Length: 216
Image (cartoon, rainbow, N blue to C red; front, side, top):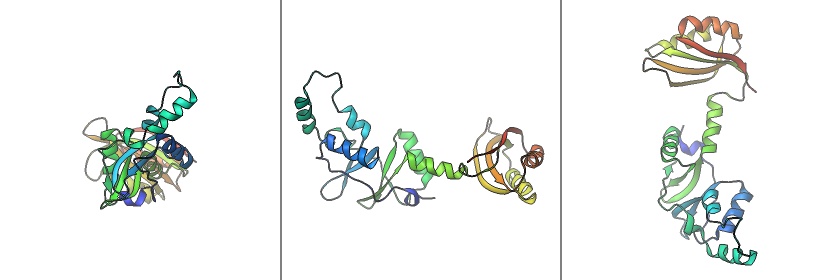
C-alpha cells in the first residue's frame, strides 16, 4: 500500500501571509488539525497545525482589551508560527515508511508532493483508519492473539489448519514477540466456532494470550 492510495486529497492549503485567526477559523470549519502552507506559485514553504496557531494566541488571562487583542492577532501571520523545515513524502512512498517517519519525528501529518506540487496530506487519522481495516475492527469474527515460534513455516501451518477447517481469515497481523525466538500474532476469522479455533491453534502455538468473538 502506498501513500497515494490513502492520502487525503485534494488538500486544503493556506498562504503564509494569512492571519492566524483566519487560519484557525478555516481549520475549525473544515475539521482539520494541520495544513500545508504554499506560496503564490503553489510551492510548499511550511506546515502549520492548530496547536501552533493556538500557542501563538494570547492567554485568556491577559489584561489586554478585546480591541488590543484583535489588533495584535491581526498582525501575527501563519509564516510567523509555521514549521519551515518541512518533512514530506511522495505518492509512491510505502505507507509504513510514512508511519515510521511520523513516529520517529513525533509529527501528526506529512504533506505529499508530486514534483513541487502539493497533492495531498497523510495524517495519523489516515493511519488509524488503515489500522482498523488491517485488524478487521468493523467485522465480527473469532479474534485470536497468540505467541508463535519464530521459525519458517509456522504461520503457513497455522493458517492452513484453520482454512482446512472452514475458517475464513478477515485480518492477520504480526508483531514483535517477547523474545527474538517468537512473534506475537493477532488474527480474526469467521465461518468457524471459537472453540474449534481454540482446538486447532493450541498445538501449533507457544502461548494463547486471548481468544474471543468480536467486534462490531
